[in-house]
Image (cartoon, rainbow, N blue to C red):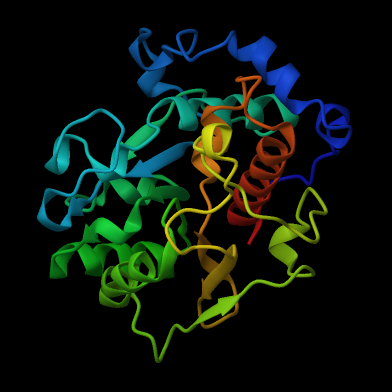
Length: 271
């Protein structure tokens, strides 16, 4: 049984960034548990995974600085964003979360071992028929997908081309999430939200990228009404996690990003 957990005093009073900076130690070097003996065999209540996908034309979106399957768009902000978020999840809840991240792809059934999958730069993704079928099966069997870090009209249309290969529009429409939607009240009562920008805000002062002026919190639900795809469009929550220990990145953006991510994780575990 998964428990609903008490709200962290640190997060409630906006102290999440200093607290995490102390825990993280200014970076992600502490978290090397994937390389520790026996770490891969440890049993945990929750494990985080990031989706590795084929990019259209080998599109590059940051991360390791490679193209194609080895890196590129799917790996933007990886691994620091993932590890920092896991540090927050472990510190601010009692979820027994594995402290290190996992990369999964759609060429094997390994994705079924993970209840939650995070994907970025999804305007570049593309799927073979077999990959689309596997992702559809994953979602309809109880999996949860969070997509983040794509901006503007053109990115949205490119995202849809891949998404509709997985979940047809007529059966699985995309809807806007409202302030009173349950997914925003599983652990933290978030209510009204604002646009969470990437680290570029520090130098530009802009919360938007491209023509993505308005944040879009959207979802796709299954036949029973359960959210199976959480869509963060015109936002970059992963950057907020990654730069949470940087004093130049505003704390309100990081705090909201952590609250949303934790609520999404808790929703995926309890619904």
